[in-house]
Length: 581
Ligand code: ATP
Ligand code: MG
Image 1: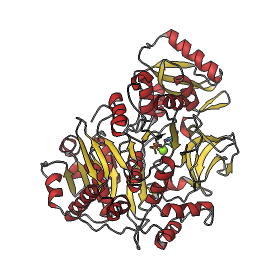
Image 2: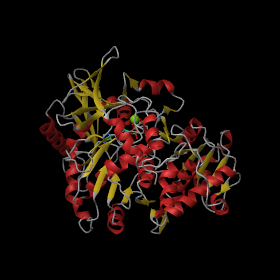
Image 3: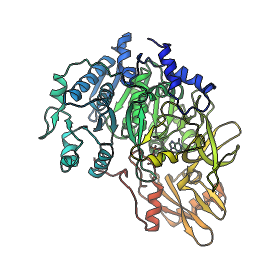
Image 4: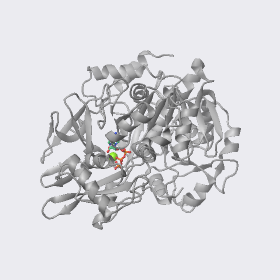
């Protein structure tokens, strides 16, 4: 390995055009991060770091991806297998006239071909965009239009139901690859095409700043944005995979996220493979016994999941976990939404290890704030900024000037730009992108607080903040208090307009098995919340729901609860979870 090659070092430094402190400790961190990747003399490519170099270094026989099919079958792909499959993909794309820089979209369930297709696209110097296969035709079409898709990798069933009707209206789309041996008219069957392609392909020497991935945000607060990420991001994927998730060569690792969400790519494809782990990929959706059984059978060591799944486990109770052996687990992490303190203590009890919350966004490309391995976990806190990441709590005055706030004060969570995996653009939305950067800060749109020991505490999205009788309330603390009650499984909290108070707090809750909605329970929950939060913050009204509206990535859509409450337009609901698949 050319781990300490001067080109890798100089590239790491040169890759930070907006770096705030060029000679600081942070610059040193990126030099360290650069040591986790090889690079070429004249560039670097994510696929080289994720697959090729491991094979060249004699690890071709290690399982890279263990696939668990929906109906119980398993398929192991070694690093050599994955490299060959990615190369075949790259050859197929090139043979159909696609060029470096072209846009390839992935739209299918979690099958090995999705993973190899993503890496083959990068190998060929093209740009990959994963979409949730469960999206309906409209969200797919909009995203493929915004991204000027040139190629699509999908299945016959998805193609027929969701693409065929408008395919010819998307001029940019040259190639549709269909999983399996047969393809509808105008499409190419992937099976025979891959078989006929050579298993070698000279990985394109992309420049560090060449685009690699375009990821659409979850759409929790509005219309999704297309965040552009470059090959150089791999430095940060390598670094944060190692230091936020404890991924080391040979680790058995399970990221439960779908690549349609940024977590499922940054930490479901790139970071794990770059760190040469063995990844578990489960095609099926959440199922309690299947999940517990998978951890036990596969001897999963590092597990990266999300609050929505953890709350589903909690809903079933600790009893359901008792028959399983979780002794293989070494590190548990969670992302995507605030992790309620209750979930941290519960997981420590049930799995013998607490979930470690961490915070980041599609825009940041990688984990920014984390309860890092070896650090004391403070339930309810997101942890501390990663080494090399400078975070601040900022107040914006009316005239736009920024002030950094001190400990204990709530303000907007901001980061000093310049780490390698930061987005480089919102596709076709330059003004919106520019607005994120003010006075040397990247403004996240989330509100948080830093305590005296440097731990960061999530308060809420700026849009979700509730203003009642002069108090500012983040929905998270109210939701966390509610789910501490034995009857409550999940809670979504919003502010509704009120003549005297400005806004009052209203909660929507789903219940655990064995509890039924009643006026008495509502009173009991309000009493419980008042005791925990005080009368000013506790919800004035609590309503019971079978389910809460969520994005595909499992985030509660509070703006939708609010729009429905107030009878306002629902806005963009393209990522709303539905039963369609
Ligand atoms: P959109 O930007 O389209 O509204 P989104 O912000 O939900 O969607 P993502 O980039 O997938 O899209 O999610 C990032 C956001 O998720 C963060 O800005 C934050 O609000 C929330 N989030 C992620 N991790 C955490 C966490 N550990 N604690 C609290 N909130 C989190
Ligand atoms: Mg966002």
